[in-house]
Every structure is written in C-alpha cells, then in structure tokens.
Image (cartoon, rainbow, N blue to C red; front, side, top):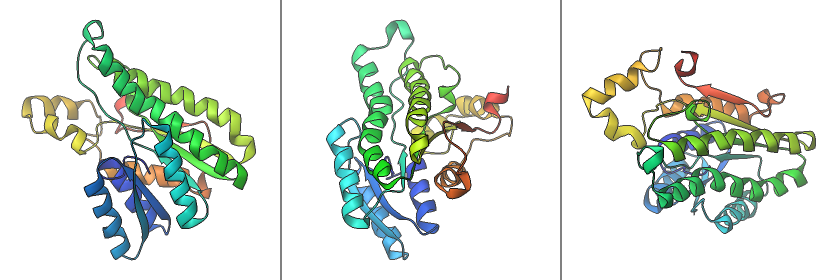
Length: 241
C-alpha cells in the first residue's frame, strides 16, 4: 500500500491486516509509517514499513522486493499515494508544480505497476487497485494538474486491465470524493468553505477513510473475481448530480 502512513492509505492497510493479509506499508513519512507498522504488529498482524518516494521507479522495485523477501508473493497492490498540489487557474498554473503533481499522482502509479505486474504475471494471479478520485470523472476549477492526473489514472487502469486481465491480473480504480483525511483537514476547519464542500455530497457529509478501504478490500478479494477495468466512485452521490 503506497501512501500508507496516514489517511486513506492507513485505513486500507488496517483493513487488510484485519482480514489476515500481510502488508507492506510504503510512504515517505518514515516516523508515522513505522509507527503504524509497529501498531499493526503489536495487534497481532503482519506488517513492515518501507521508505518509498513513488516518483522514483527504483523505490517501487524496492517495495516489491521487500514483499517478496518478507512474504514470498505479492497478491494485491494498492497504488494510493497522491498529492493535491497548489491551487491556481490553468492559465497561471506553475509548470514546476504541474510536473510535481503528475510525477507523483500519475507517473508514480505507472512506476508502481511496472514493478508489481511482472511478479503477479509470474504467479498467474494478482489484483492492482488504484486510488483515483471523483476528479478522475469530472473537472474542478483551480486544480488542473490534480484533475488531469486523476483522469489519466483511469486511462492507465483500463489499458492495464486490457493488457493483463486474461493473464490473471485484475486492475481497477476507486474514486473517492472528499474524505476526512489530513489532505483536506485545513479546508474543513474553515466554516465558510466546509459547508459548501459538504453540500456537494447528496448523502449530507464527507466520507471516511474506512469507507474507501472497504471498497478497496472488496476489489482485492476473490469476491471481485469478475471485476476488472472498472472505476468505482466512493462519493456519497457527488457524481450523481
């Protein structure tokens, strides 16, 4: 699980451990990442932490090697890590910031797949889940890089599914709406903005990381054996409007 030290990634890691999986936590936040690994082990689970900058292909290789060394196989890979980037209109969006967001959110997932797929193909079975966003399906003013990167993930997921589903590897994406994580905590502390954010969700609230983790766990399981190339919104009705 990339981006596993906090937010959605941490909830996904906890969910998988609760279901008996052995987990590799990958993140650039070494302190929180190792703390979560220790917590999961102390509760009877199996987890290790590996430092991973998802924008570096070699780091993904190291994560897969750690999984193989520690557990002997790689059944599920959750490419979750992402950044919001700064807000600015497209005409004014800094080129360096564009590159930074796309490197992490889009290229980082491709690098992950390139490291994960050969192992899964050799096994003849595997499930790759990508955490995209509702902004993989619609636009959002002031966030051109984030929106483009999340749209790009859906194209990548569909291409990879077409390439490899017949070889036993399923590839799917989830699309969270606004979720109660550190990424949006600052926004939700401003009442004048928080109200409009909540109003975008017909269900009447923002989501929890655990609600996203439940869908990811389903996609990783054999219960989703006929699900591949799919994009499943976890959005409280955001996209239904």
